Amino acid sequence: MSRDQGRADVVIVGGGVIGSAVAWRLAERGRSVVLLEQFGPGHRRGASHGSSRIYRQAYDGEFYTALAARALPLWRALEDDTGTSVLTLTGAVDHGLPGAFAAKARALAALGIPYELLEPERAGRRWPGIRFDTQVLHHPDAGRLHADRSVQALSRAAGKTGADIRHGVTVRGIRTTAAGVEVITDDDVVAGRHVVVAAGAWTRPVIDAARLDAVPELPRLRTTQEQPAHFAPVTDDDWPSFVHHPGAGLAAEGIYGLGSGDGIKIGEHGTGPVVDPETRDHRPDPAGVARLVDYATAWLPGVDPGSVTADTCLYTTTPDSNFVVDRIGDVTVAAGFSGHGFKFAPAIGELVADLVDGTVRAPEPFRFGTREAVAAR
Ligand SMILES: Cc1cc2nc3c(=O)[nH]c(=O)nc-3n(C[C@H](O)[C@H](O)[C@H](O)COP(=O)(O)OP(=O)(O)OC[C@H]3O[C@@H](n4cnc5c(N)ncnc54)[C@H](O)[C@@H]3O)c2cc1C
Image (cartoon, rainbow, N blue to C red; front, side):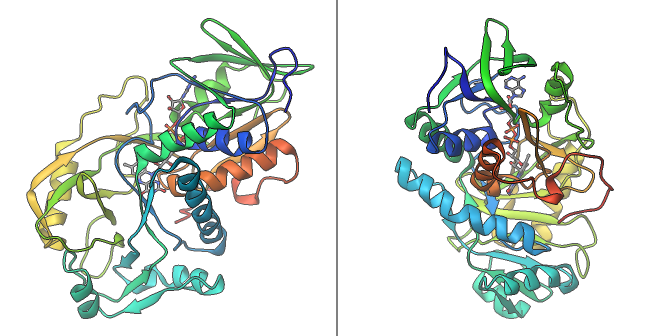
């Protein structure tokens, strides 16, 4: 698509997994794209770094299950485009109280996605690294994404298709004009017809700094510092990605986990302290690490609990854990991914491209506006 006097069709603020996926899908459609990212490639200050994220389709309703299923062929297309492997299907298991995953099984069934229910003894023989005390929901079209490689591949695919990806550029303001938008950085003003704000934990400050005709009514975004930990596996067994729901034998918080190049990763979902992304300390809280060691000791016979290494990462969570992906005028926001957005990134990229093109309205769960505090998982 043409640029008139240097005006891009779309300027994207943020080069995490979401902004990069948006750049790829828009560039694929022939849109001229400029992506502005404040830090360097592969930085560890946001939400998208590291060696792994869970890819799974089992959600408590058809909406997210269908969105995850839509992302799968797009991840594969990215791999074809870039010659990079990003997604390994290992299957996923949910265990804990079966009531916690009945709705997930229903959503999978409704969409014709294969799954099975296994008794704990059978699951234990199949995945000896995990101890099961209840029935298990297994679906095979799930596994792990390599996070760093995914972001690099998205950025490379976008660049190959003509997107202009600029690192080390901080957006200080956005203003709307008769011709579209002007995105203000320290050294430049980047003109576009449309701006997409995919700024993760910095979304609120970016919107607050903008001088927009119509300001998006964002739900409250709560940023927390989370701390997954890795453990060395003690055997060569296969590891599915897993979610252990609280209840039955697990008295504490629910736990997610998966195999990765750095070992077996586990974490609590959204229990970290509220932080400012600019001033957080990046230091794992010892009490939280101790809880993960206790969990590994009790439930993961396939790891060495003494081998723990912990890292930190940001969640930006909405009151109902539903994402914010909506458009007002020439401004689209893709934020509030609430600790579960990575797997959907290319499907979110498609949705944002549709919003920018004006061919769809935002799905109801993703719209601007205040929200009730209800868990979406
Ligand atoms: C510990 C942990 C485990 C997770 N596990 C999973 C999982 O298993 N499965 C899953 O699907 N999801 C998971 N997630 C969630 C997933 O990683 C996030 O939803 C996703 O990475 C969010 O991406 P993002 O692009 O919105 O944010 P970010 O990656 O934070 O990207 C936002 C970018 O915007 C840039 N930016 C901000 N302000 C400006 C500015 N003014 N100018 C220029 N650039 C700017 C930032 O520097 C940043 O790079 C996990 C998250 C964490 C923290």
